[in-house]
Image: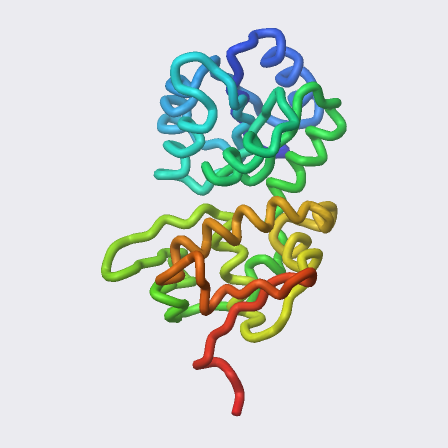
Length: 234
């Protein structure tokens, strides 16, 4: 039984070959593409569970490929970058990647990240259901659709999972660690940068004035709180 279907996208044939052999040996079904255009074509024709996407490729780069994938799919995406650079990491998460891994990496680390990305933690999908107004957005948790002023707003999977968890625990202060472990998994409790980027993106989509939020609030040095007056008990 397959552990999942993975698409490797990298312009370096040796890297594609090494990852393909290793991941196949771990029980994954693996295909590859040497660029963003080829990846988009394969994603239109076949079903995959996860994409390993190199950031720096000729023609269509990894960030643009990630953005285009996100317009049509919620597939798990791990970005591969050659630099341990803050801007690269922020760019990857902004584009909709679930995670990023810095080259060179060992295959054990990559395998752990793949398992985490494929695992949908129950707490991230919490009890929130039905429709609810959150800030200036109308959220349908059953269809995972968000509208604002009558227009569809696309949230990345991590943005939506974070919003769902916040709504399920509305008006409560949630620590960075709790949010990270709920949305990304138990091994991500210290990755505060992940959370900061996704919170900033989410504010742009649900707050009338993202620079002065009134719903998705920062609790300094602790975490975040989603303020929903309608859910506040008297």
